[in-house]
Image 1 (cartoon, rainbow, N blue to C red):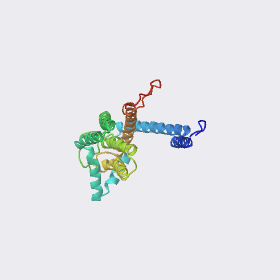
Image 2 (tube, rainbow, N blue to C red):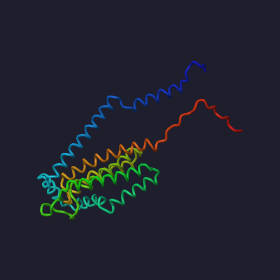
Image 3 (cartoon, rainbow, N blue to C red):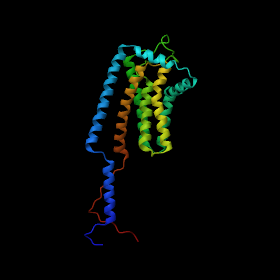
Image 4 (spheres, one colour):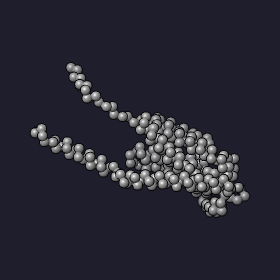
Length: 260
């Protein structure tokens, strides 16, 4: 082959790789648009949560809270009641401590060391922040003379600790399953399971009469903000400590001849 003619197969492979990279990458205007939309959503969620927190500080409950609770509690289907109870169960101690520990141990055993650490961090931070805000707002829980209360809890009502924990912790597991697993029946099943936990826990807390709808709405906002912060922390740590970086090759070093 003539030295001044390119190797056609190699050239085609390089061109195909470049085309694939261009197709996979997002254009700069689209990336900027997505960034602006994402930042706008964060600002809106933070502002709405702050406003709702101020209202919850001064208002035990809203008329709409009472109406929503009574409407949901009109559902008398035993299967629905059992589902609501089952959804809330993982959020009560001791299982709310045991489940994150078991999940972290499983992830660590699978070799996902940073994922295990990040899962524990999101569980601890979500619970800690929830308790701090509860003590700051000190909103009373729904009274038994207004709605049916499944169990009397001694903690404050705003925000719902279950919803904050589920949104942050199960939301993080949803994220891990989505980005780490290939498309498969197992991946789809995990996404559905984690998604259902997050979606239904709010209704379960209202149905039990242990939280108002505004407690749940504030908790979804707070849990989402915690989830976004922990995903950013996870990605930072993953790229900094757990992704192998290619070592530069010193071109001045001559390759050693193979041993006979």
